[in-house]
Image 1: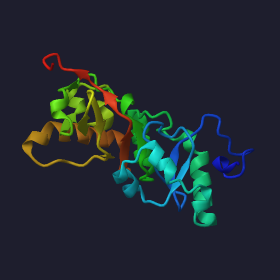
Image 2: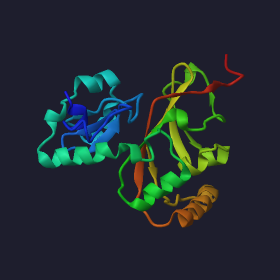
Image 3: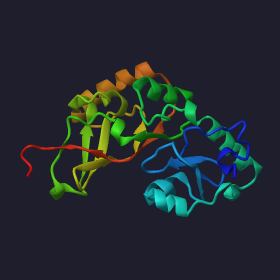
Length: 220
């Protein structure tokens, strides 16, 4: 009855509901597609990479849920409780990510993936090109295009979906340099950003949900 709170509903309250997905070692491996960290926690026998590649719907995740009984031993339960009880303190709790939050997570050096809602990213400068381009990946430098979130995400790869929707591919937050003279402006901005952020550990950013783009005026 109190599995959602690790059988301790007095200490581990769940007023908002949360939908993190944990593996059998008690480690956070992802979030459900449309609710992020908010909703009922699930437990799957998968790695983080396997969960990301599976692209399961909320119903599919629920159907594979092992419950807390799937946790492998006391250490796994401990890992889960520690993670679950601190979800609200994570920068991605609200599905958004600011530059200060991104850099702070970088400096902490855990390397743990953050999970961002697609609809929290400013993509107002991008346009849907209609269903003829569904399934085709595109790359954009959000900073160059003037996105309010350009300094956070920089260069992102997107895929187009029906009904003017798009998703973003998983990204890595780091300050690596790209080869080629065409990358010079990008590398200068990256270098400046690295000086501001300081030393840290790269981590992944996974995006959930879809964002509907405004349709280009020239597309019928």
